[in-house]
Length: 200
Image (cartoon, rainbow, N blue to C red; front, top):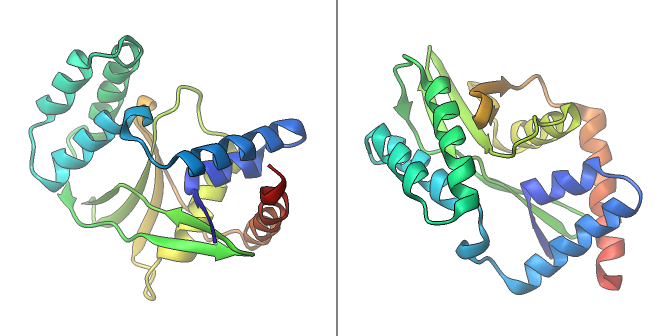
């Protein structure tokens, strides 16, 4: 079974031509090397956000980590992420719940669908994937992530709201019903990965 993260799979899906091949080659290299927290650029700020809700840590903990992280590049980016998350929270009364997670499989490819947050506010139970990158997420990127989340994580009574949080801008993008055409496209993308993987 070829195991790929949700972010890597969607990145492959939205690309075309040679960048698609390059994306998959980088994914295979990362898979061969194994997960290394040192190279996980957003790990510290991601963990701080999750701990703020799951463990009741003060929001100032997020700001402290953002301000004092040793890596200069992170010091240039983490404060913006912290402020964007603070903007998203605003005055919301938020309750944590453990977000569901699952693997989506097709054609021998397994994609980990792993939202970081389960937050209940304004009467809705929100399952949230955090998006940290500088550029705003592309529409197809958003639809792909949310469609896979909804198709794999939604409960039988459809009481969960799937969301992608553009953290820097404090913008929560919530789901529409899963796009059947897009899900079929992603089945095809999984088949392409399975076919290309051995030659990389």
